[in-house]
Length: 308
Image (cartoon, rainbow, N blue to C red):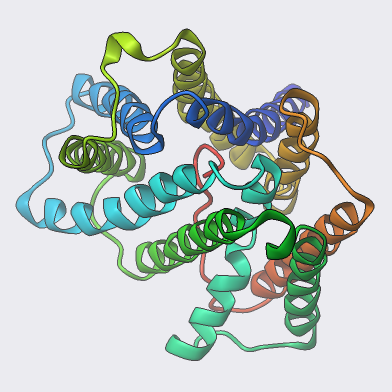
């Protein structure tokens, strides 16, 4: 009973922290280049993970493992996290979090039409319909005519980041590697940090470390310590001590937290249409996830350890 109470507390921490990291990222990119922010964040987060496992006696990855880690780092962190962070410059943190939550829909479509591994049931179809209908509601209100080309760019980048996360999740689920999953994440973070860091140096789109404002450093520390470490540990604990269906509820709470906190801290306006759209989308994602769990060969799509 005590473990279960702690698990519910851990679930609450996971939902709140990962939801607010979207808002934190939005605040961060308002004061420094997005790829530089993502690079520093992943470097610090990756260093913590790798240091922990090296101190426990874990060996360095083999050549074969490195050849697997590099493309996964591009899919899961350079693209999914770096591009999503860049896209936050043009859209609200709530919308970015909601688009990221669509990845189960993307997984279903890829699995069905590319691998022929998932059966599209009536529940799946209803979930897909509601998910897309919800996004249509939001885009109808916050349309290109209202926000212009930058809004369209932000949405497109967020969708692309979500799709690459889906592809990476499918590859991980179908191609197991003999390496601790969390140690692997640390190396993927470090590889992505180096890649994005070199990109910022090549393009010249960066500021020196001493010019990074205090608010951005605060955001980075919060996302690393809170999102990449503390919330991730809470997530693992909740998964161990709660029913998976309950432990996975954070995925539906994250966007709601991002929307509400974004409206309070960043004055991101919420309309009735966007609220209805958000509800439709989350119900749709829930139904799709449920339809996957009822099948024998579902893809265990990995959810971003820090909300993105």
